[in-house]
Image 1 (spheres, rainbow, N blue to C red):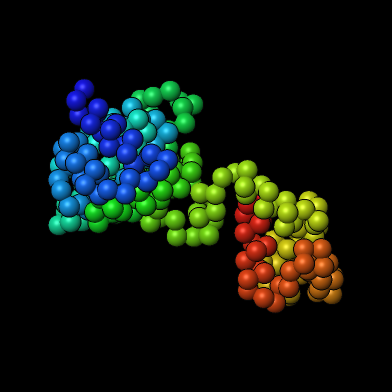
Image 2: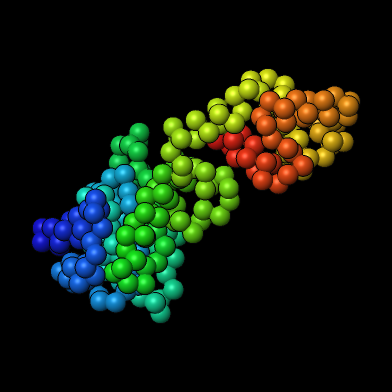
Length: 234
């Protein structure tokens, strides 16, 4: 219909390979799609455009425009809406009514104060979409507040390369296990030894081997983070 066509035209402008430099063009597209001028706006990205349209139809009083796989919402600044929170129960219903094995995920970008920030909100929505999974099918970029959640948005093939590059020399046996337990116990030699039922000297020896093989110094915070991130990516 006409509204969906206008939404697709707006989405096409946002998704264009070359960024639209004329804010007037975006503002015209927003108006044509029925969205109030001036913002703020939020961009959503989904694995299924029809499911996205169905979910948004259940939000009362929130103007929106839907394209093929993204949507732009106008959020009344006085309403203080939690759009990802509102969409979670609706998305669960949409998933329940669909094909059980369908990959239905949704990501939400941060608020864009005006048309000129829409493309940034789109990038955030796509990252949040990548971080979403079956356990958490709706993710807002503001909910990516842990390192593990942030890493979930990195493409799997990139995470795999990083983990292999960083940890590959350790193999899959005792050195990797010792490293993981050591980091989980805040680098406490005593607690690590107790958790693994080892002598403290054995833990010292293994961690020294980890440092040698990975080229990291576990007395340094940045090197600890390198290895922790690699373990989460593995």
